[in-house]
Length: 145
Image (cartoon, rainbow, N blue to C red):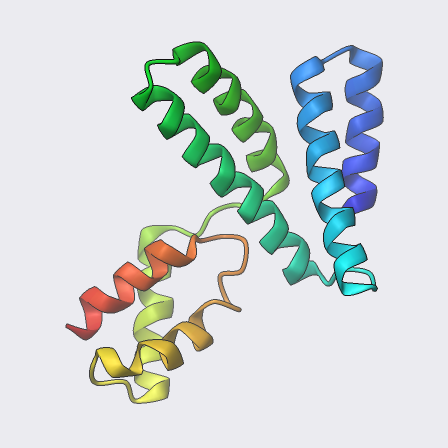
């Protein structure tokens, strides 16, 4: 992932694309900081977690800027969000996510919300980087209720 981002960054610099360049630089810095924190190269799942975290930050910023009436900053964050989403794998469809969660419930024998953790532990590795944990948790809660 880091190599891909470095290549994309060089291309953005050649094309003089400031939004893409700055977004890729920030993402690369976040990935390298995570590597430094762990003192080893990141695994694919860990890279996806960093990208998801960066995506979530942008989504929260867009919402905060809109609530504050700062439309220009919100639009800027949305542009950065589009660049980040290009790096993430294709999101899982609602139907596929529901099927994965239903299978996990059946496999773990979950019957109530007390089993939420076991189901989430089974589902999250399957949808790593393709679904947000909060949306997965919400679906699990609905199906277990």
